[in-house]
Image (tube, rainbow, N blue to C red; front, top):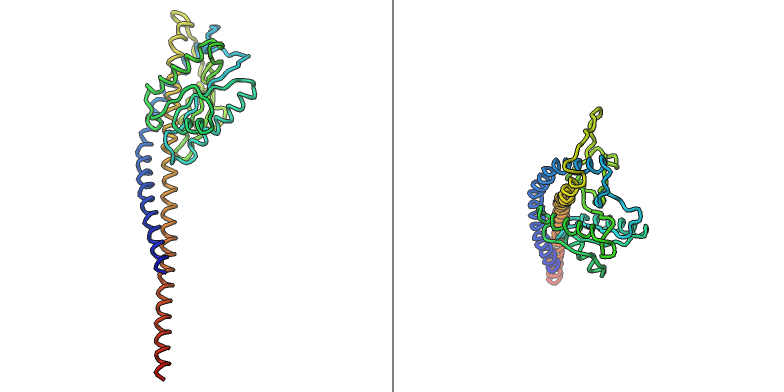
Length: 313
């Protein structure tokens, strides 16, 4: 019984140590997710305005611009996959990788060669473990991305998109990120970044848009404005599209960052609650073992006293 008591006490001590860590991580994530969500929300108006501007140029002109013209015979597609740098965030990275795998399978079924671009150590580890090739990786900023991080990614994929096919150029660029809807809901989402794909409304029909950055529809009864482009629509596109790609990726990084922290807070709360229940279980078992030990000792004392009494007779 003494050995069992020591084992239970040691387990209670170990679980208590783990509980302190998970509780601290939960509090840190809870504090950081507020700022991450605020950054993502503040980026929304500019992203919406910029997307509207690019969409207006693309839809009100007949310019045959490479960043807005779809290739009916696309043969190669780049896929940017955004995951976390660290674990302990529930199924956040796994869900994004699963959604990316579905997209890759779809593109390959269409006869396209897929070239992955990986953001976050979880995506890099996933591909390296399976010995799969990828074009480039970025990591170290998943929970607090900056615009410079987005610019590095955007400039690389834009350059690859504009290359000729024979030189390794891409016909399409897709983005897989996690859309922050609320503190309890984060959805993996796929966006065709290039060529420009105008989205007039949330095709999922969900009124809870969260931090979605699709083009907002104009209010009913509002007439969409007409545009004149100076010096020319082509030059306007040349100026706007690099900004559009960088900002779109930046907003996706911010949304994914808020999603990661929310998922981590939820996962750590669950781990802390489980640790609390496990400690209660071990304490109950320890009490049962102690009571069994006391009962056995009492029985031995009573048995010894009866044996002495019988011997004196």
